[in-house]
Length: 380
Image (cartoon, rainbow, N blue to C red; front, side):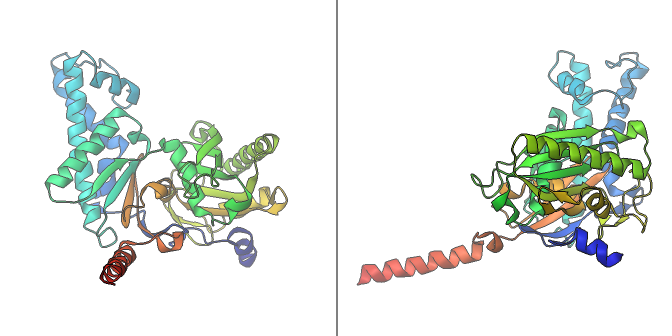
């Protein structure tokens, strides 16, 4: 049975692989700790809400809380963004104060990552996750970069370019080998989270931009499984149904869908498609040795078009970070932090030679050789 699972799910690569077509994954899902517990908890979206609540307390005591009785957990990001530029200076000051304190926490956590062996020489960090999708998130990221640069860390921090929901799907393209794109113009992608499962058809635009920089989500489907509280088997069945619906729609529209499904999933992903740890927020026990999501999907969707289905799964933070591959080519080493329920993380090293790109040393050698040829020609 184990051999059968491997044949059906890892024919083109291994799940959770450290070596992908565009990058080497130096580390992912590192769980750093301090005396208070997991370090990532200090820079999560929940941590920001707790900080906001603390800054409201002084005003609440005097009866001047600009947010009234609304719980800090339920104030929308849109409302907080509007307050930042609104006429209520006290309310704006509260949000700015919360942003500053959160930036200090994020800087502290980032500093700890940068001092690990796996994150040494990191040149740029992209920040994703739901928190990034707001003006207050962008300000916190920018402020964190300033704090780190003031301390002598030569690292750039940038908000992830795609919407976080799209990034978790588009990144799946970089799990697939490049030959898949020659005969197909789209793939299926799945982004599994503790609250939602999102599926989508991702158009590659490979012929126009072979680096996949113009890839986009053609259509997606979202299910808030947390509202339904399904069993594990029920969740897989619903996921397969969503994917089958997207396959039918893609076929109706004439898309050339690849027989490939890329999956982003929380936790440490083993090469056989099992989940070692980190999937505790998913419905049911996804860490059971008897459960294998890629194998379950191959069983439910054995073929896409005229070809056998191939499935590849990796950590969700890794996949979201992979959406940035085309835009990180000026760096050798870069990382991603995703601010959500926790703090996802991954560090990458670009594989430029394998992508037909020249690394800095090769380019320097060629420039030197060209200079010598030019000098010789001038002398002759």
